[in-house]
Image 1 (spheres, rainbow, N blue to C red):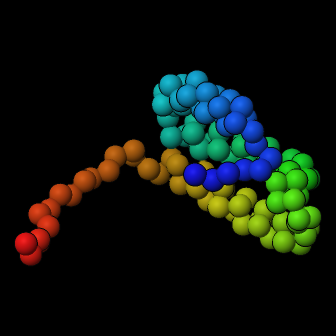
Image 2 (tube, rainbow, N blue to C red):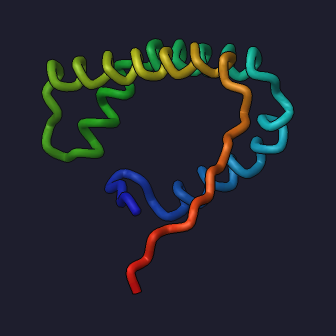
Length: 105
């Protein structure tokens, strides 16, 4: 498991509790609503870009370079928006294929 130097055990526990609390309502949303929520989250991240930079500097404790952060942030934003755009095209099902493995013994 990842250890975040800037997050306490209490932070982690609160995050998990928060995720558990909203999961039932998230399950009731349709793909279009999920896409919109994901795009809104991306917008909030963009608005808080400077705060994200400060948190990254605190987390890494090495004084993150703004250029490096900018590159990583732009990749993250692109991936977040790409994923949000795909949410409405998924149907939430997955086919599981089982096969017998050839075991020599």
